Structure formats: C-alpha cells, structure tokens
Length: 146
Image (cartoon, rainbow, N blue to C red):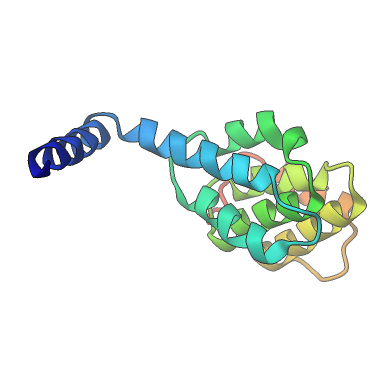
C-alpha cells in the first residue's frame, strides 16, 4: 500500500514538473468554478478565491477572464476579481480593471474605478468613464509601468 502511494505521489510530482501549466490551468479553472458559485454579498468567501486566481501566474489570466467574465454570476465575485488583480499588482491588472469598468453593473464599475484610482494615484472622485479613459490611454502598460 505504501508503494502505491509513493508511486501516485511520484506521478503527481512528475506531471507537475513536466506540465506545470496544466496544474496552473486546473487551479484557475477550479477558482473560476468556485467564484461562479458565490452568493451575492458574500465577499468574505469571494476575496480569497479571487486572490488565488490572481496569484497563480500562467500568462493567460486575462484571456481566461475575458472569455468567462459574463459567466461569473455575482457582482461581488467580479468586484473581488478586479480588486485582487489590482492589489497584487498583477501585470494584467489594468486590463482586468477595464473589464470591471465595462461591467453592466454600476456597483462593479464604481468599485473598479476606485481600485484604479488607488492603484494609479489618480485624483479621487473621478467617475468610471474618466477612469476608463485613463486606462485606455495606458492599455499596453502593466500596473508597474503605469
């Protein structure tokens, strides 16, 4: 029995070493599924899941979010995703913030605008449309460059 466990553990470690992006993609997929199940207003559950998604670097986080954004059903989950990408100074933070600024929900747009204002040191109180213009002007920059 111990030998079987050792072989399984070795196989898991070997697959992660040989195919690291598959493990990252699986973690991101799992996080997105969990975010899709968040109940409205449950930011305490949404925040760590969003941070987990933002913290797993695969290089395709933004593309995954762009495709899946409309399927993330609650505004609290979408808001926490934007916040997580801005808090972690993720290279795609501005692009994800733009998703938030284009969200159909006004609360998500407002929260995204406030996050960008803090991240970029813009004057407080700017409406989401002006913040969106600031991001569009910097669309090819990372948060660190902006």
